[in-house]
Length: 107
Image (tube, rainbow, N blue to C red):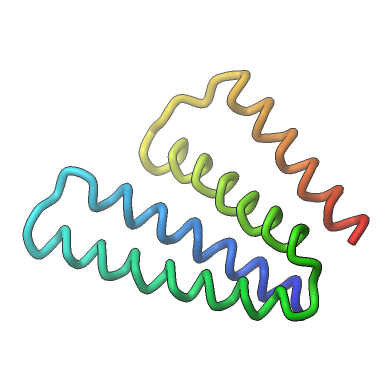
């Protein structure tokens, strides 16, 4: 169950980075709406991470949490915000995913 909670926490991290991307360049009510969503996902992500670390090793949980956030943020950038998907970017993304799978396997 802790791994599921940790995965949801990582997805919340992706959600709050998406909110930051959407808020970029906005002002007024639209900006505040995205920033409130950012804050909610940020708090939820941290709370779920704290819950997951009650049974998972802290170092592993934190690395997986940030890894899910990093991979998710890059994928959101590529697919939603049309950032470049260069060879080296994808290569290092795959190595990051392999590292996360390895941490899960040894924990």
